[in-house]
Length: 194
Length: 194
DNA sequence: GTCTATATTTGGATAGAC
DNA sequence: GTCTATCCAAATATAGAC
Image (cartoon, rainbow over all chains, first blue to last red; front, top):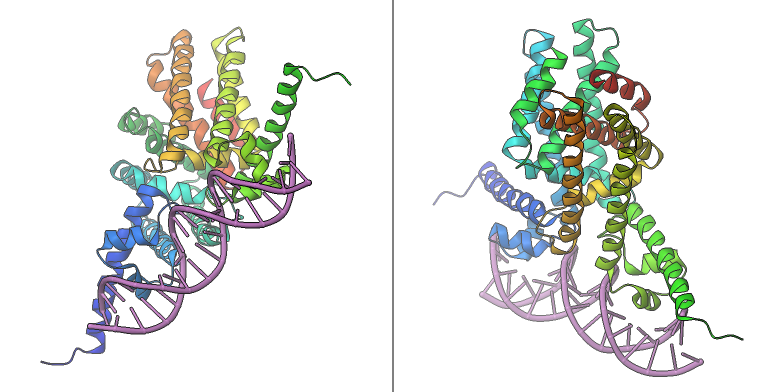
């Protein structure tokens, strides 16, 4: 039997890591970051607690991984939106994506909102939550540019107004998924902007 | 020396309880419910851990107290709004109060949002968070009635639209207090409704 | 009423066998 | 690579002295 190459080993290790990450977000969503134990995550991933430490240095490291992939996701969406031809289409893309996302997986949005509202004094969580916040600030600057290209009077204020409406909807839907008519509200909201 | 009456004792006990509750919300806001320890709360209240158990049956009981007082606050505001003569004034009162509240104490709003986004599987927190959610649902029904009195075409949808905008602003301000021009956005938002 | 000391539990992290 | 057994720290809760 051929010995495995270094790359092959690396790939296998990567798959194992992703399996654990997936288990982690499931468990964190269900029980919350603090209430979830390493053992919960390991069991969900189908491995032992000891082995988990072979892949992650601890619970904080698991959270870090999830936050980084969330950031990746956000950056990706903004990049995709930039490929659209007109500013309005770009903004529509951002809104559609955000709302579709929360509609499909409200608990995921809930989780990151939960993390974002974590008190700053919690060193572990707040470090990573800070990174997420900074990325969103960066992306919101890009959004201001889009409004600027549209030629509205006060692009900065208009952009914040847009984000406010969007996040309001996401928050409401994530909190009351069963009673919130997202499609109707979406139409109502977008029609006030475009 | 006169022996203290039962009422007097009760009053003293009540003051002690309130002191602990105050300490609890301070500590919970700073460290988060899970990360905060009973000992943290006791120290903040200036008493020993043992004594705290004389007043509260545990950490969950402390949270319960805080949630109940938050619910009390919400009910109070809605009652006050009902004394205003016209529907528009009632809604303005609700909005003004909510925004003033988040502006004065963003961390308090943050804390309750953090609690509200807590996963349902956490039996302790979710029981009380559920109570808060139910009260907000109750109050939102009252708000629909106000819009109905205004005679708008779809009071239910319009009321949700209003709440969405309001909560969006509160969320944005609580998340980015330094960069969010609340007064300007408030004017912008209210002008689209009235 | 109040505190100190202690019992108990939980869970993060490590060591060592296989 | 993987698991089991164990260590250790932290935190809840209680008991008992003052």
